[in-house]
Amino acid sequence: VPVDKPYPVHVDKPYPVYVEKKVPYTVEKKVPYEVKVPVEKPYPVHVKVEKEVPYPVVKEVRVPVKVYVDNPVPVKVEKPVPYTVEKRVPYTVEKVFDTIQCLVLDVDTV
Image (cartoon, rainbow, N blue to C red):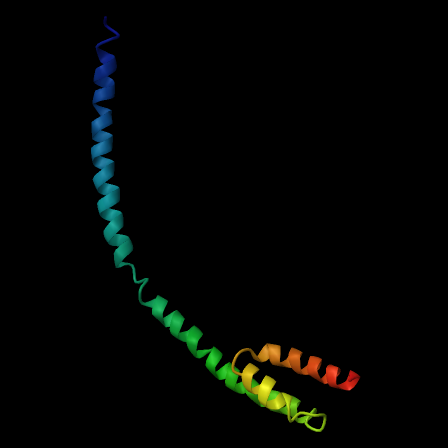
């Protein structure tokens, strides 16, 4: 009987006190803190930088592509120039180099 009385009293006191103090503290303090952190400002700046980088790179790579096309000009380039160059340059410049080499090899073997 003496052990039955202090047991529930001990558990009843720290339980509600711990839960009531922790729930409002962590929830109320974390929500306004995380929302006020300046995360929205660097995000759009990063996206703008990524969109501006591929534009000048694609325009700069167009110069060497013309130099590559100048070599196979005498080797029946009248047909592939308007097809492969015009269609592939705006898509991926890296693939243009691979396809041009393949096309030149095909023409040589034929």
